[in-house]
Image 1: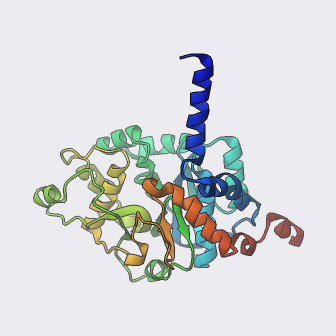
Image 2 (image 1 turned 90 degrees about the horizontal axis):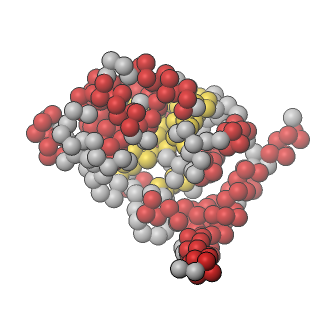
Image 3 (image 1 turned 180 degrees about the vertical axis):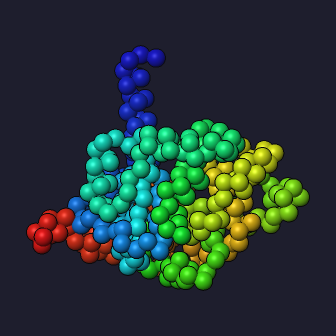
Length: 313
C-alpha cells in the first residue's frame, strides 16, 4: 500500500471512530463533556454512614466526574468519597480530581499495591487474583480502605437524573441488612449458578450487576472470597469475575435487587428513571443521551461555577 493510501485509510478510520455514532454523540463527548470541570467543587466527606468507592483510569476519569456530581446533586447526600487509581492516572488528572472533590481520599495504585500485598498474604488465591486482574481492586481495595459500615458501588458509566429515592432509602435505613444492586441484562458470571448451588449450596441472584449498589462491609469476607476463588472455572472473563465474586458474597450474606427503574437496559430512552448505567455496549448513549439530558435539565447551570465559589470565600 502506498503512503498516500495508508494516510487516507487512517483518516477514514479516525473519522469513523470519532463520528461513527453520529455528530450529536461526538459533540457531547468531545465538546460538552469538558464543561463539567467549570462547575463548582463538590463538598463531600461529611457523612460516614456510607462511603462511595470508585475505580478510575486515564480513559474514564472525566466520565467519573459526571457520575459523581450528578449523584451528589440529585441525591442531596454528602457521603464520604474514596477514589482509587487503577495505575494509569497522571498527575494532571489526579490534580483535577482533587480540585473537583476536595474532601475525597485518592488512593494511588502504588500505595494500594504495597498495602494489599501485605493484607492478602494469608490468602494466596486472593493475592494472585489481585495481581492478575485489572478490576480486582473493586473487590479488595474498596473494602480494605472502606471507612464506613456501608459501601456504595458506583461505576463511572452511571448518570443520575433525579433523586434515586429507593437506593437512598435502603442505604440510610440502619436496619436494612442486605446487599442491593441494579439488575443486569443477563447473568454476567464466570461460573454457572447451577454449579454454585451444587458445590456451595448457594442460590446466586439472577442478573446481579456490580455497577451500582449498596454493599455491607461484613459481606466481603476474605475467607469467603478465598473459598469462592477455588470454584472450577471461576477465573474467566476479566470483568465478569469481580461481579461474580460480589454476587457470591452477596448470596451468602443476603441480597435483594433494586427495583426495575434501576435495571440495566440496552434500548434507548431514560423514561423518567432516576439513573442509568451506560454499560459498554451503549457507552455512546452516555454522551448523546445522558449528558444531553442533563444539559437540558440545566444541570451544569444549577451546579454553579468554580469562579462563583471562589468569589464567595
